Image 1 (cartoon, rainbow, N blue to C red):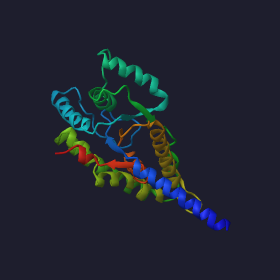
Image 2 (image 1 turned 30 degrees about the horizontal axis):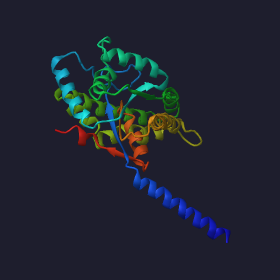
Image 3 (image 1 turned 180 degrees about the horizontal axis):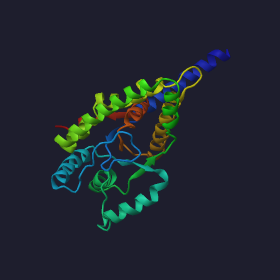
Image 4 (image 1 turned 45 degrees about the horizontal axis):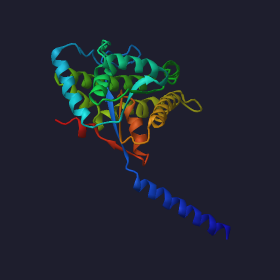
Length: 270
């Protein structure tokens, strides 16, 4: 009797969840992977500096912002640690008054002006800085005859970045963002971890896998920070992050039935 009762209760709960999902429209998520306009010294493979002071580049940025604004996000989530929210609030409010001189990074050049266009009260800081130490992986590979894997990884990553730089130098900023957010480029970025790093280690030693696990953990925390930031009434959010984060974040949001992931190419059109 109890078995049938529990089964009936589970059936009712399932019906309720299904009804709620049907009644509540999915929140649209636009995951915009970005290069760093001023490359980080911590990145092993870097694009070239984007001269955002150049008039042509400013024109290109303006054109991209016009397309992004049509997505109409209720929030713009940025790659700044959550503890930096008060600083960003202060800077953005000064920016709205014309009292803040924007820097050359993608937050100042994309997120701030886009939020201003959309009349958003602020931006949302969601970054989480987890552990990511390559040294144990390199040391293990060198000590255990696995340097060929490191060399293959280096060649693959270098070729991938060469492709990015080529587009950066020859095409517009919108073309660049459409390129780095393409399915193929995101797959290449993810494969650096899944195809190469995980192969470093033998027997009971998993230095490469541990490194990848830490990378996944970092992105899981970022994902959770985004979920925590969502407010009742939000119908669309945009996430602006280094494009290395996007493959994992995309997988996480696609597996959550409350969200609809919008492809960058559907917003940044030719």
